[in-house]
Image (tube, rainbow, N blue to C red; front, side, top):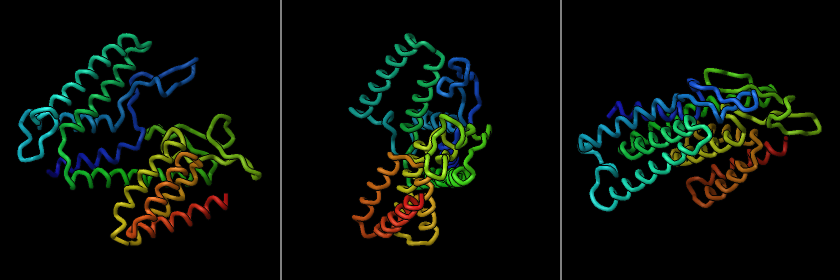
Length: 272
């Protein structure tokens, strides 16, 4: 349905952003600690809506859509119910012994919401394309932020998007030190450059799936994302990029992406 497609697009768009309604700020040694913060992310709201739709679909029988694991009979349904029961027992034990039961409860609640959303919603081409389209639109913002941050040597805080402030001169922030001075590694809208690097790897993988279209927009997006990934200076992301380029070079339809990506990466790394 169109409602499910729109919801998928919104979920994909909000997924890479850290917009959060903070319910309880996390503190460690008198300073803010994001890992102990309890809040409701924008993606959590969309995820909860998807979980509710999935549960309603299960109760109604799913109509003409593919049945979810909860609707199927036999071993698959038993396996799914068994996993849920095991997770419930583990979560209850974890919450009981946790030093911060409320934080543990919030984490487990988010996990169960995700499981219900994944198990309850049907998978079809339109829904998948809408989700990936929303994700790619969100990554455009992260790429722009990454390039501006690298050139400006600073990443201003943006409360609405959940972005913390960073600077090349701030000790403890992720930087690259060269003969010309300290350069801020690109954060984008993520808490660390390594996370941005992984998100860009996923973006490149999604772009490569449309390689058969052979249009200029796809190639432009590919080049810009490879360049943004280089600016994270994440060794894990660079290793992943190398493996991705090798895999793409083995297929005729994606070989041009591998060649262009290797050239852009070599030039960018050579200039830095």
